[in-house]
Image 1 (cartoon, rainbow, N blue to C red):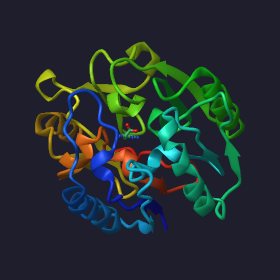
Image 2: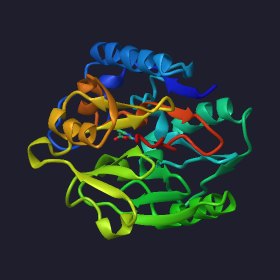
Image 3: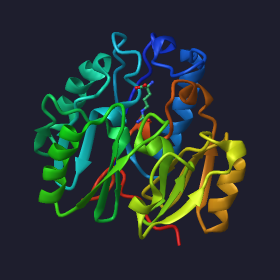
Length: 265
Ligand code: CIR
């Protein structure tokens, strides 16, 4: 059975890192959104495991950033944001029963939001949070698991998957200007329309449905036209803290990895 590992929302979530002029997110409203997200994964057939929140780490709900599952290997990340490094230990303790663990070591940094696995290809964002040394370490693990690795410089957004969201293993929704699209060769690219810039978020689930943020209906229509079977949910408090749908879970849904999306058509 596919498994989704989640982490509860800290009472301190209103102090989560917020970029730019953003507002503080509300922990209680975020808990309602998180419950709906959890139910959607349950309905999709995932077994749900939820780690307790850590109030010393306001961003701990964004569990994706702490660990990456690549084939038979778990990679413990080393977040580029120093205040988030303390989130990794408990997640890895939980996952270490499942698979061997390798670790990103200093001076390398990697956050899971920068890692996108589509079929046999792993794309990794070179961002404010993931550096070249971390990418080199991740590359060694990915190549040992038979994946090819493409490093993608990321501009103006937090992570690779803030600007490039997988819909299935050959389709992505891209916010124009955030990446050099020639690095995504072979993929079908849908552009997020400018009036919904940065509003779209998606999580392909193992039952073939794609969870999408309700905040971007026109972008959602574009992927529905391509055959995606979508389920919109409100995640506005999660988005207020610069989060999206992938960052709330680590999906272990097949021998390959957490982000190994299914083809929608
Ligand atoms: C941060 O700045 O680290 C959090 N407020 C947001 C992290 C979102 N993570 C993700 O999309 N993978």
